[in-house]
Amino acid sequence: MTTVVLLRHGRTTANAGGVLAGWTPGVQLDDSGRAQVQAVGERLAKVPLAAVVSSPLERCRETAEAVAAGRQLAVQTDDRLGEARYGDWTGRTIKELVKDPLWKVVQQHPSAAVFPGPEGEGLAQTQARAVAAVRAWNATLGPDAVWLACSHGDVIKAILADALGLHLDQFQRIVVDPASISVVTYTETRPFVSRVNDIGGDLSALVPPPKRRRRSKASSDAVVGGGAGSGA
Image (tube, rainbow, N blue to C red; front, side, top):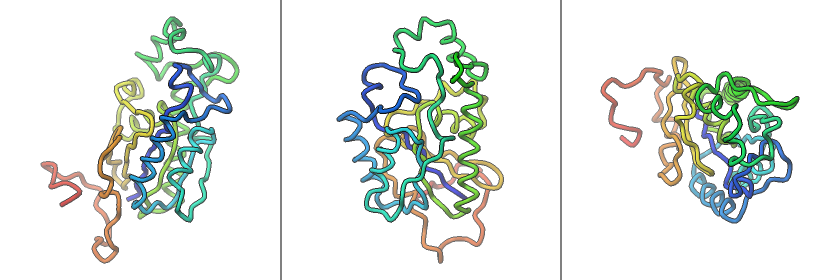
């Protein structure tokens, strides 16, 4: 079973200003965001990560570096984990965008939403590339790996919707706050989503047990009745 820790970048100047940053270069964490990523780095310090993979955008790389600090791991980047390409919406304020007719499509039928302009993409494309990235890294790192993917709110929501078996049109029901952690374990049968939008919980359950305690092959079956929990 491969486990991916999905980490959204910390709060940015654009987040605080209500601006849709998209792929705008130079958008960095604000003071609150830097405090958030320092805290999340401390929370993850004891989790043995096989890799730290980031969106290439500055706000994610800055967040990922905070997690990688003190580890013998270089942050790797993957464009497929980059922000949704919002096209002509990029750089505009949310206050302005809510008046655009496309806003209702994004809210109610995101699978049909395609952002305007030559640089715009559909949210379905965003989901496809992001899920493909997670699956590819899972295959590269192997079934025993725990690894971290640092990405963006809509991208993480799209990955979680896929893991939960939700149609993309339901992904707006998922909340992913700055510097929050969501966790998905991928098995041969199905993904298991164990955390969503975790901004302060104990992460000791992500530390794999010693190899001598592991079964020869982890089960892909869900526990009927819910089981005793990961701490049992």
